[in-house]
Length: 199
Image (cartoon, rainbow, N blue to C red; front, top):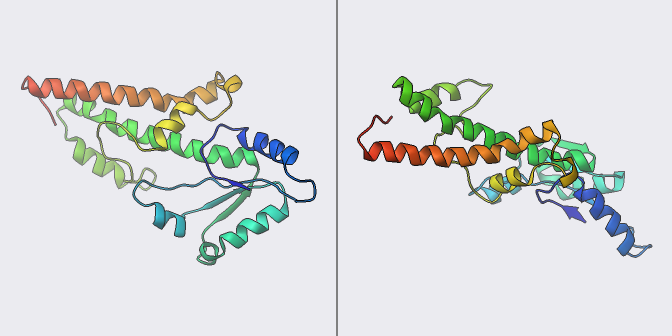
């Protein structure tokens, strides 16, 4: 059985425990966690040509099965990262949180540009030419949406009893940034309607 969903850390271990309890003893059933990294509107392409494959496994047999399933992309040289359940779960949540934070950062820049009378479009383009930052997801707008980013930011990376750890709270901060993005956009629209400066 292969899990692919965005879930709090610990879900895979619990699923593996339940699977061991419920599966026939002679069946040899086991769990692997293989998060998907599909961009909205590019699901087919990203499935056939992923930029990386993460395999959370507990046995060589599970790893070998996933390598067989992904034989074609592996033949293309796609990285195959073998790890434990918790890391495989956290990779997806951390990726969502990072992207949400990046989007929220550039969405905050119009406020700064309004004060400085600067052009946020040129600012974003200039930042995007920095190889350490990159231009992907660096277009100012209303916020972020889709099926994964808001859900991932709201869930947080860990089970409920671990959410108050400071490091966990920093990953869930992107959800609050989304609220701020939308509030800022309403302010921009209101100022524009009153004839205020807008870039």
